[in-house]
Figure 1 (cartoon, rainbow, N blue to C red):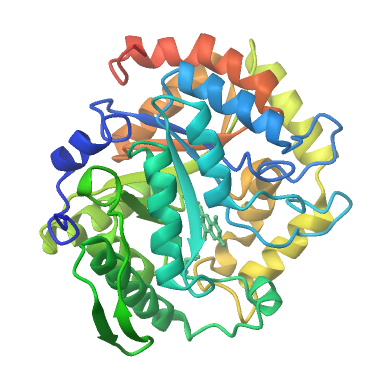
Figure 2 (tube, rainbow, N blue to C red; figure 1 turned 60 degrees about the vertical axis):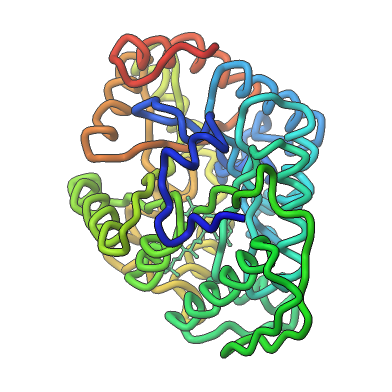
Length: 383
Ligand SMILES: Cc1cc2nc3c(=O)[nH]c(=O)nc-3n(C[C@H](O)[C@H](O)[C@H](O)COP(=O)(O)O)c2cc1C
């Protein structure tokens, strides 16, 4: 199997996965639909019910609209509050297998917490999903941050930057299995393995697309060195262009190109006022503040990520109700299309987003925003 990791070439990835590596200047993804409430920590009754049937309907709708990807959240425990925000979740690789079987073009990601899943098992699971989707599976590697979840597995996390060293070794083992090099022994810092084999190789003999969303220097370096996509956290838009540029430059130092995405939440209504009023209704008056406080406490706590500095806490709190601290896209269709265009000017290749009520809100977005993006030259019409 050709290993494209060291010189990951986007044209080669395009041959294997023509959707995620298409020529659209702005790629789109639906985020977090495998979790109850999606990414909106709100108490409104229309909040997302992450049932299997709802997920299938949404996947088919997004696929028909030419949306490039579905990105789940790898989550093991809810955030409490009145709604137990994200308390119901589907495991993401099995979720991806099911959705790949129901769709035709869209890439479906699965998220793996590498310290919790042994690489021999993960290699096999990923290959299975990748064959089910004829190459449309994508892998999101999470190196860990939430010790509360890790406690359920009896697992202690490495010191922060060591998590990425572990992730690198984990990923190297997986790629070696997929290369058909076995049986091989592995004597690394974190793994001692004997007689390792794994067949078949991924679909078409080349590895699936891989992304990660680390935001610390160690996390960004991991993305630059290994990932095909980096998911950036964009708290301050004025810093976005510099951040994107930094990641791309770091990747080029490794002789690589990668796509940079960020996440946000969409509230699109016929008028700006209607959109803002609805955001105020679900994300302020009916926010699940208990869940938001818990999420922030875990993120900022001693065992959590260092990525969110105290400086962003206030903004994060306001944004967590809408969608995980992502960029707010709140407005009428012209406003949202203009915001999306602005994101491409900062250098982003793609945006993922969620809605309060995905099945009710995605059709309006598809009808009104996507054609505007096409007229702006940011996307080709879906085939
Ligand atoms: C868009 C996005 C998606 C993420 N998805 C997950 C996820 O599914 N599960 C998870 O535990 N962490 C997820 N994370 C957390 C990151 O993988 C990472 O642990 C976090 O950003 C901290 O980065 P750092 O270790 O570099 O500080 C996500 C982060 C972002 C920005």
